[in-house]
Length: 82
Image (cartoon, one colour):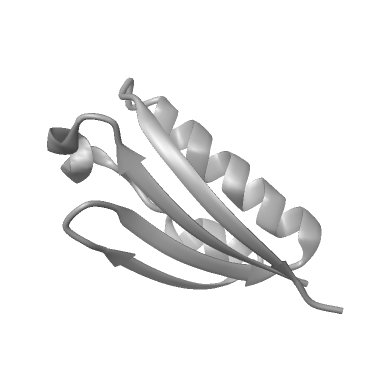
């Protein structure tokens, strides 16, 4: 199991409203536990699940926000559980 704490920051602070999190349908289909919140400067998500599913979710999260054609910073902290 992996727990990933992910924060997305727009390079241009005005782009905060256009950041998108993972859809709950995606998270449910991939059997991931999650917690989501938006602060005044970032979009923060905690994702917990199997290794492959968490990596898939991280890739999906990054790619979907890149498709919005804005510059973003994604900071991720991973914790491995055995």
